[in-house]
Image (tube, rainbow, N blue to C red; front, top):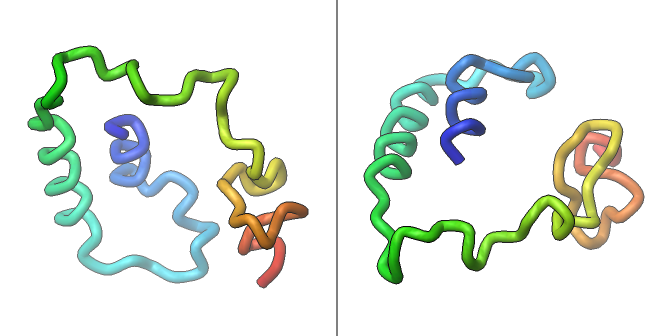
Length: 81
């Protein structure tokens, strides 16, 4: 989560959005602080319950490298716009 938030804060792949998000940096910083301060209820082992590299989502668009919704198994929302 923190790596993805850091990438978003650096405007990684924003050129693919087709618009310039306004005031998103404040929201991302707030989200980043929430994630950093998160304390698991059932202990400190965050690996339990999260999928590993071999259990990644099957429905992902290889062209755009984003997850796809079930009706769009052959591509993502960018492929179908």
